[in-house]
Picture 1 (cartoon, rainbow, N blue to C red):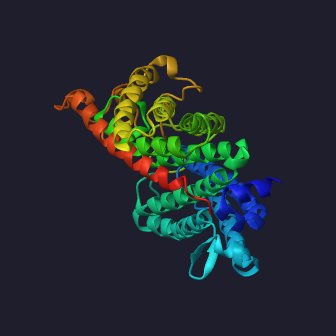
Picture 2 (picture 1 turned 90 degrees about the vertical axis):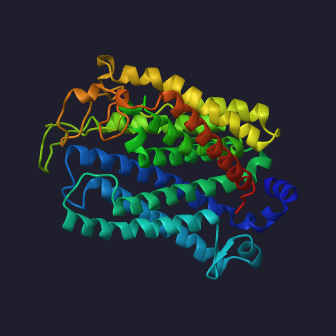
Length: 398
């Protein structure tokens, strides 16, 4: 009965009904693998900050690469099954590449798998001539990050296609699954922009609001447009914050000893990432504005979203930064004042920065108000791009 209803409501869905069980299995596997990849990424950052890169065969690396192998095997199986064992109708419904047929999300995951696997020997070679560093930004790490994000985006596209299909059947599981994977994408990009947005010392700086508006306005606008929940952007931002907190609350419970000199700060446990940025506040505003202003012109809506993002984000982040730099936040709940073993501690920990290079925000000549206006402009353009992507993503069914 469900298939016949879907068949009559969405004509092109007839072509994929017979492949739904296989796609569902792969979709679930991809979501689990995406979670494990991010677990491995956060664990790896904590490992670098607490122990150092002692060997490639560290537990976080093994979690990441085992997840990548699962992604590659499941997606390859689905593509080969559809290409060689599927009917002509099933093959016609899939995306074609080099003669093979498969869902769009599976192809994106395959690309991410190759990028992550290639980054492994590249990273090993990089550390041989340049040393066992603890830097996030390096060519092999960027290739690794691109592969991770591609796999998570691939999982997002798989859940998106399922949501767009089963929306006619009023199934909420696919909608929640899409919101959850949207939160994973936000989490991945928050890690990628960590050096500009991660530390609460940066939350009074112009760079913080500029980078956040450029990245997260796009994501929240896109999710608000494509999600089929009543509060899709809010749900995705909430999943991001919850996932980040649960991982970091758990990691700090495990003992760790630095193994790579110089040891400036002898830590005794895995050092977690700081408290996550408060994206749930602008996400609520995005959902409200999208419901009330959708259909009145995307540029007008984007202008409201860009300005609203900066205003609401600043209203939440500005006082929260002051709290996170205070003694009250120096506990295992708010994750404040926890620094890597290679950091020489000093009074700079409790000051606001304008960049990761330690320039005090108070020394800057440009007023913060100018930075806010610039961030609003960037947020408007970013939100407009996000709405455009959302318009396309609402049509994704394969």
